[in-house]
Length: 180
Ligand SMILES: [Zn+2]
Image (cartoon, rainbow, N blue to C red):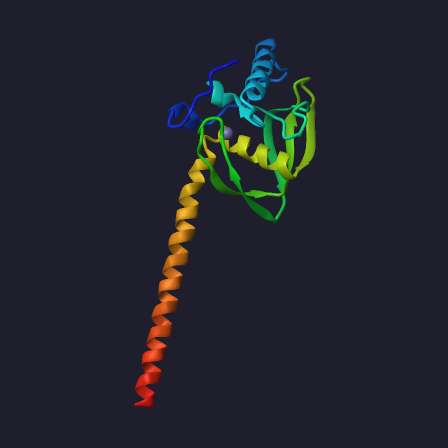
């Protein structure tokens, strides 16, 4: 089992690089360690950057039985749903922290499997969400970063509310003035 880097470790901010195909024995061994580390920590996804490797690789298993690992090498989203869902997300690199994150409900991903085969597959629901979380890791982004977006939404909402209140106040003042 490998040690998982945790926030605020700056290595987690590095952008991962594509790995060479065919997949080397070294990288294959790394993938096995990643799976072991993910399962032992009861995770449903793990990106290589989380264990200190700047490689565009992740393992994902959103199945209930935790027996269906998916290995994603050099993954890129080529199509995504218009609809997003917002759910609470946690991360092995940010223990105990949870954040509401908007995610697409399905994504079509081009990637290489551990046998070196190039695949193009559409993933849905939880698996799609976990893959988007891992893709964020590959760009140096963490789910807890979405706090900023939420704060912005919140501030915009508060500003709007204030404006509406002001307008309705002015309106009531005007009506009062008219009545008098
Ligand atoms: Zn994570």
